[in-house]
Amino acid sequence: MVDPMTTCGCCECVAVVLPLCNGVMTVNRDYKGDTPCGMKFTTLAGTIGGGKQTPGFLGHSKFNITQNKFLAAEGGLRRLVWMPKMLKDEIMERLQKRCQEIGCPDLPEKIADETVGITEEQILPFLQERKHPALEMEPLI
Amino acid sequence: MALKPLDIFKHLPKTNCKECGFPTCLAFAMQVALGKTELANCTQLSEESKKRLSQASSPPIRTITLGSEKSKVNLGGETVMFRHEKTFYNPPPIGILLSEGLSDEEIDRRLEKFCSLIYERVGLTLQGEVIAVEDKGQGRFLATVKKAFNTGKCLLLISPEAENLIKAAEICQGTKPLLFLAGQVPTEKLAQVAKATSLPIVVSSNTLEGIAKMTAVLSDQGVTDLVIYPEVNSVGTLLKNLVLIRRAAIHGGVRQLGYPVLAMPARLTDDLLTQTMYACLAIAKYASLVILSDLSGEILFPLLLERLNLFTDPQRPLATVQGLYEIGQPGRDAPLLVTSNFSLTYFIVSGEIQNSRVPAYLLVVDTEGLSVLTAWAADKLNAEKIATLVKQTKIEEKIDHRTLILPGVVAGIAGELEEELPGWKILLGPREAAYIPVFLKNWKP
Ligand code: SF4
Image (cartoon, rainbow over the protein chains, first blue to last red):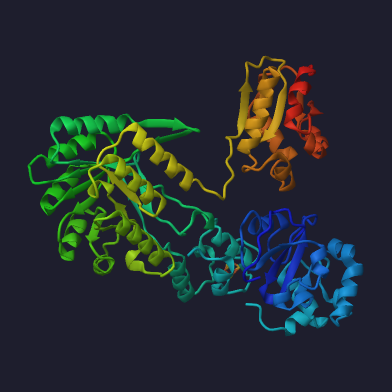
């Protein structure tokens, strides 16, 4: 996230840091609504593609979310605090498996989605209540 | 260096109070970094952070503006060492030197020649911008300045006499020349002239340390419209100095050298072709203003092209202007096609229409330089945009039929477009431009 790789601009998802939640959110191309970082996918896509590198913003694939290198420098999948419901449902099987692997089998339920909120303030209480691991991790910024 | 969103964000209050009109501080920081909004729009920012941020975000190299409304050029203002890191902003103006040693006829000849060298290429006007006039104490300086002033070009006025410079500056009403007080000049004197005329002035020395010392003194006195001129006697030293200055300003944060740089190949040799090679080097490597002794077409044109190539913005795809284009002489039943404004797309599509020999209307939508499919994916080519443009261009008054030919690859928006354009039939064209000729030959309104 400090020196993110650029993409050609056609990545499936964009991950962004959420400073308040000390975590990272990601949003897929098909999700057209607002996100907790205050920007929609289309705006975010402009920050990571076509040779641009913007610290704190990272383009990646859906599959990448459940790979072991996802956000490796930031502590991996444990950092993920928000993703659209449709994306979560789509990759649920692999997500559960990966969460098992990293020893947080209940992580999927701790990751917020748009039904919880689309601002950082809305999702923070949810994360606190469910004791999301990102809150305990070392500060992102 | 340009600030990244997170660097800006670190200084923001992080309260997401939304006063700035953005939903989060991060979104705001993003827009500030993109230059789309001003830091001042955050109402909650402490004075302390404001100061630190504006210092950090102030450009490492000052921008100096010369000329009049019409002949305006910017010097400096660069933020990177290499074009691919972001972009170069201000192409160095190129000019000729009228020294007093020249005869009147020669001065007139050079002026006339210089002003006649204008080239139109890819929708741009390319030309040299600056005339330097040098006082050699023969009493003809002011007369030459007048001549040069009448051409409407930007001026660089060079004289060892402060008084002459001030007088010359007075001639140049309504335009901003650059002043150069030549010789071993005490900094105090420079400050006086700069203050008396409120014009940008050249600081010269044969060492970079010397220049840095002078600019530091001047900026302390509030004189900051400066252009620096490292005096050199070989092209090697010129290159070395140009690179060192740029590096110091961009990477070393050396504010004292954060000014545009004047390069004068005219002073290095009398041979014009050698000067041209030096100029070529100076344009590529960081000069902000380049003066040769004379220019002719075969010398200026390659320099202008070199400059154009280096100073186009690599971040922005080449784009054609949005609008309705007529290809051939389309009549009232000519086909109407839609495409994006990526230059390459436009040239290919319009070329294929020409190949078909069917006169047609081509509606070019502003997709910010993206090709059709990419623009569609980024929502920059959509039904709404096309419909708006159809109405704006009043195409309905030009053709009798109501059929719009959409690129085959964006079939997905045909339905929406029919809704946006009641009474219109949306026809799917070929998926590739190569098939346009066949398609158009079979087309009937
Ligand atoms: S006004 Fe300042 S503090 Fe408030 S949301 Fe905008 S950036 Fe954040």
